[in-house]
Image (cartoon, rainbow, N blue to C red; front, side, top):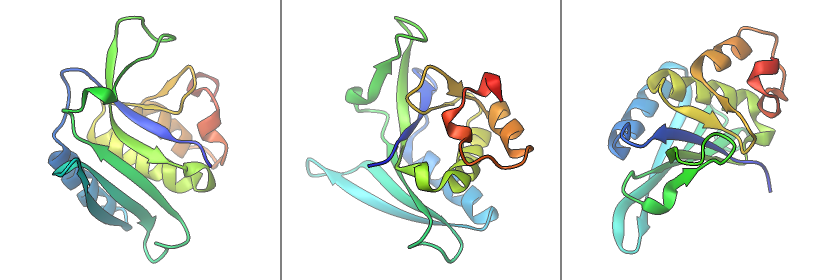
Length: 155
């Protein structure tokens, strides 16, 4: 079992699931990544969430990420992070599972998402977020496969 990450949106800045899926797919294609979208059925309702498999071209079975793209209507996906604020509510719009074996692909994908949604934050279950500018700095330095385990303020 690997580590997971969340792309968080502030309440009120939610983006519809269809728009997220379409925007990410278009950007992945531009970056020569495969994007394979699947619709899930939750309690008989199609589209409660989607998941996508993201991979570098031609490597769907070897190096990939599974990304759940959540619908903004599910209140169970709202969260408060006490280390950030006792009252600020986030919605996690994307859940990226088990990226720890593919940290380069994870970085490239995260850059795509945060460039599309610069108001979003990438959270990897630590007491910090990554923002778009943090990921840009990481990308512009020699690649460190442990980048995602380090506080961006220390990079």
